[in-house]
Length: 187
Image 1 (cartoon, rainbow, N blue to C red):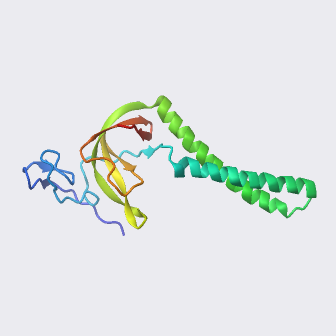
Image 2 (image 1 turned 135 degrees about the vertical axis):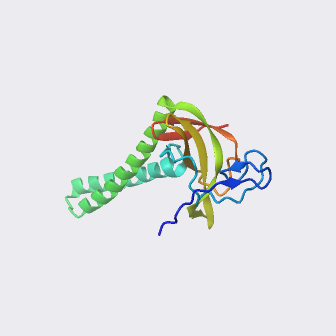
């Protein structure tokens, strides 16, 4: 059952300013606001990270190569020996190789498309949300980044793929954005 989100207006206990984040942008005091359950004033901008990481590009490419070679080997065996049971192996290994290759090429294409056609914008790291998955039994982190769009301010959610807060709260980050894809640029 999904939790009901509440519209929350908080006052910073440190300086008295109205806040909508876990940390006050004015004095830096912790506010105690749980932004995962609160309905914030800015809606989400549906965007996907187009970064080339190991599990998005390297791992599928390794799978495509390994299973592609195995599938080709079974295909050669099928052609030379006319043993039709090898057709099952060709379909399984070749299918896995083709799907893995498609995933790797799709992620590479998305990354190159953002790098070539995207425009550079800036965003502010607004806070972190604990994700539903764990890395070594510790919750992964998703950073909430506030950006300006033609429709107004919006949040994008960036999976840091780490349990440490790589991006500091209230810091400005550079983002290259194209349609619904984005890449965080190095500082």
